[in-house]
Structure formats: structure tokens, C-alpha cells
Amino acid sequence: MTTTAPQPGTRDSSQRLLDSAAALSYDPTTEVDWDTPLDPDHFGLNPEWSTLYGTDLWEEMTHAQRVTLTRHEVASIMSTGIWFEMILQQMVLRDQYCSDYAEPDFQFALTEIADECRHSIMFARACSTMGIGAYFPRRASIALGRGFKSLAAAEVAYGGILVAEEVLDVMQRDWMRGEQVLPIVRTTSRIHVVEESRHMKFARQEMRERIEGASPRRRRLSALVIAIAAQQIVSNMVNEGVYAAAGLDPQRAVAAARANEHHHTLMRSSCAHLMEFLDELGLLTRPALRIYQRVSMV
Image (cartoon, rainbow, N blue to C red; front, side, top):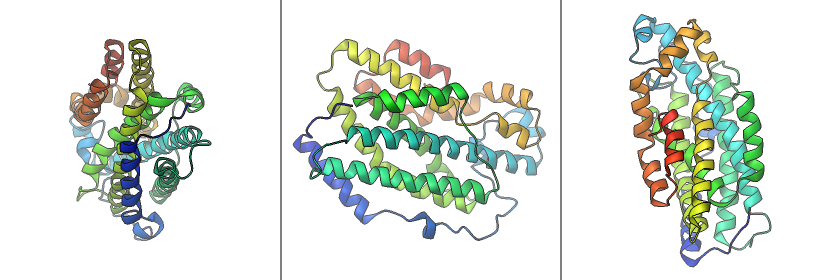
């Protein structure tokens, strides 16, 4: 990545984010109640966010199957979050390499990395507490992720970061209020929402700064790469293995999930603000839109 000296407005914004982090941050080891036994009737996420909610297959499932499915779905989403947080940390650290250490921009970037480390551990521990092992992205996506974390620069890197954070943010705002949702999921969602709100502001200010004055050709290329990154993130959020874990026929369940218009509508609504922002920066081109449509982001 090529770094640029932060502008006065960016410097002030980064200082406000630093102040916010100092005033409102959480330690998951003490904030989350890790020891209370899990209520067997509590879901892993609000049922409405399940990939099968609203389908004929959902109506056929027992309550126990629905609970198991949603717990595995949230564990898969958390696992995908860990995967991308590891990519994010490397991109931000590379971006800030040999930047001015006295600048708030540099200091908040490292604060964000520290937050992401805690979040990854928090998600990993939540999955372990639910008794669910790690879910991993597809092999091709893992390979693409290696390339993305090593090569993505400027607005492309921060665009990928923003996509991952925005999509998860809308989901978790709903889960943290869900009375039927496991307390550990509600609490970890609340922590993530509060701290990621700062990260999203930082990513947006970095994108605005990096894209300023960019040529139309660069905007088109950046738009395409960000869209491909978004496709990889969203398409890996729910691993197909979650259906077998709930005792379902995987082939039928995958087909039902892919055709589930209720879930597609939720995804589109969760991405509305993100799409508006990308459009504002000239990063919502026709080729990019086609990619977003494939994963129901628009």
C-alpha cells in the first residue's frame, strides 16, 4: 500500500475515534458470561436471519433442529469473521508501515488491529462454548484471500474491510436485541457493534481520502475488485456443512437456502447504506452491480 500524509480533517476524525476507543471499549473475557450453561431453547441468531427461515423445509423442522441450525449458522458467520479479520489486520498493518507514529491516524489504525485481535478470540471462544468447531471458507476463497491481503491497496483494501463490517453490523444489531438468542451471542454482538462502528467510520474516511482525484479507469478497477471481495465474504458466511449438522439433507437444504427470497431481502436491506456509499464514491459500476446481485447484496 502507498500511504499519504493525513489531511487536517482526517487527523481530527482519527483523534475523535481514539478518544471514543479510550472511553468505550470492552474486554470480552470479563464482559461475556462464559460459564453459565446454555439454555437448550435459545437460538444462535434470530430465527428470521436463518438461511432457511420462511421455506417449506423450515416448517418441517423440529424446534431442536432450528436451534441447532441457527447455532451452527452463527458459528459459521463468526468463523468467516475471524478469517476476514485476520486479512484485515495484515492489510492495515501493511498500510501503516513506517507511517508517522505521532499521527492519530497511525495510532487509531493500531487500535483497530488490537480490537480485531480481541474480536477474533471472542468469536473463537463463543464457538467453542457452543461446542461447535471451526468452519472454513472454500479452498479457492482462502487462496484469493491470501492474494487480497498481500496486494490490496488504498480504497480497495479499505473497501473490502468496510464490506465485511457493514454486512455483519446490521445482522448483529438485530441479534443483540433478540430475546430468543443465546446470551453469549447477544453480548458478543453488542461488543462487536459498538467497536466496529469506529472501524467503519475509519474505513469510510480512508476510502474518501484515497479515492480523491482517482481516474475513471482506477475507479472502475477498484469497484470490480471490491465487488469480488464482497462476493467471497458473503458467499462464505454460511458453510454448507451447517445443514448436515442439524440433521437435514444437505442437497435439499442448500437448494432451499439459495431460493429463499426472505433471506435475500434481508441481505439487500442490510447492504443498502453500503451501496449508497459506494455509489457516492463512484464505486458502484455496472460490472460491480452484477456481482453484488449474485449474492443478493443489491
